[in-house]
Length: 375
Image 1 (cartoon, rainbow, N blue to C red):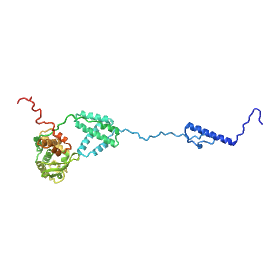
Image 2: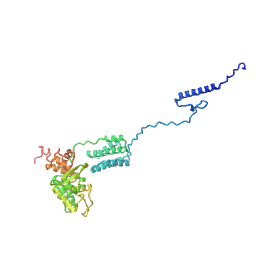
Image 3: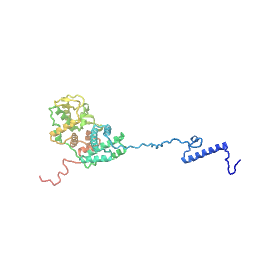
């Protein structure tokens, strides 16, 4: 019976209660998907009473970029510079080039390490060029030093010690312009004859120095070529003595004719020193005895300086004897092509610079122009 004014609740059928619970779960799941945007929630994420089972929070990770950040390497330490220097020297085949590049790189490293924490870039190389110009160096010397620095930057970038961008900037640094042509230094025929006859031929050291100076003056050899000369190089070709298959600068091979008087001086030295094989020139100690199996290029420098001082020539380098040979050959009527073969120049323009063909010093154009005092 129902009491008046009180309505009793209708009994709930078990099937309808189960249906309503499933609808609530579906409704809650649909609302949650729309709010979170995650459609991978399944029924196992819900509890039996329809509530969502919460997972422990997971820390979000930043998406890692596949591209690695490029770390700019611009400051080179002393071990890095030594490693790049070794790579530069190993890439050169000529001993002269190795000696010049080694000296140029050492000077740059000394200047670079003297400054506090300089970056190896284009701006620093420009500062180094200004430093070289302030020392009143010749343009060719400055350009040689800058070329060594560019090569150092290239090898450092190739080894991974320097970033490519600074290396490219260093390679864009221009050299110093050469204004005019330097004439160089050479000897006259009388000075050349007095030079090779200056050493005492009665002493064993004097015989060696006479033969060496005669070979440098008459054959135009470089210092390292004279040091590396062996007895096997001397052969007869067309009834004339010659240095056959001489490896010169850059590995260029040539044949150099040897005059008879030079061969006589050389034979006098070889016979006195009892040299029958190996290198032609050896060291001579203070007691006048031959020792060792060769001599250095520095020793040739001192021999030329000592002999030049004895004849009153203050400034004379071994390479000036090579220039003297070229000019004396040209003055005696030698052909330009034959002089090029003798000196081993790849370009004939180099031979012309040795000869100074474009400017005449003896009988110059301004010697007689009509304003001279009357004799």
